[in-house]
Structure formats: C-alpha cells, structure tokens
Length: 133
Image 1 (cartoon, rainbow, N blue to C red):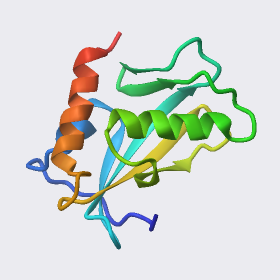
Image 2 (spheres, rainbow, N blue to C red; image 1 turned 180 degrees about the vertical axis):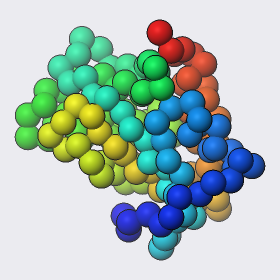
Image 3 (cartoon, rainbow, N blue to C red; image 1 turned 120 degrees about the vertical axis):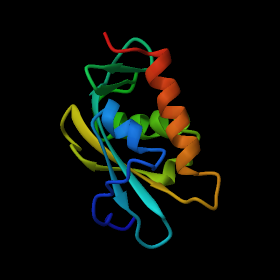
Image 4 (cartoon, helix red, strand yellow; image 1 turned 30 degrees about the horizontal axis):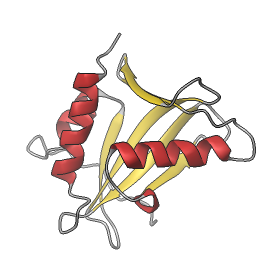
C-alpha cells in the first residue's frame, strides 16, 4: 500500500462525518486507491470475545488473539476489514505495531466494492449500534 497524500477537508464527502465522530483522517489517494481513511483504534488483545466498541471517539477493537509475534495485529486487521466488508489487503497497520494505540490505513476506490460511501455507512452503523459510553 502506497503512502497516502494530503488531508481532504471536504464536508460533502461521505466519510467526513466519520472524521467528526471518531479519531480518523481522510487523505487523498495514490496509486490504485482514490482515497485513504486513517482510523485510530485502541487494541484489546487477549479479550474474552471479539468486539468493536466506540467509546469517547475512540474505536476499541477486542480480539482473543494474544499480543505475541504479531498475532493480535493480524487478528485486528481481519476484524476491522470484516466489519467494513473490505478485503484485509486493503487495510494496513501503519502505526503502533507494539502498542495498544494503533492507526490503520484503509484504501478505498470508488469504482469497486470498496466504495467510500458504503464504508462510511458501515462505520456510522457501528457507531450507532455500539454507542459511546
């Protein structure tokens, strides 16, 4: 995945609402992607169950996988990709490999099933079904 470009400040973009609700940044795409969405999450490895919860603007991802040799990072990537209905190859960990505070970069293309509008709706649904506590 190529490095994302500059930040997009478009109130009309479907993902702009997500950036207001949670810690996320929208960036111009490069290469095969039209747009990148960077989402900050807080990881909970070794949890009893896998879940996604929005709390105080931070997306918490819990996984059963232990934080050993990158197992939890792989599991978190799969959980996030599955929740957004995108391929795990379009979701990459860019910061926080050995920290519980992580940043994922999600590459989106308007012409494929990785449509930013669809991803925005899925993230909004996550926020509504798992409200802030």
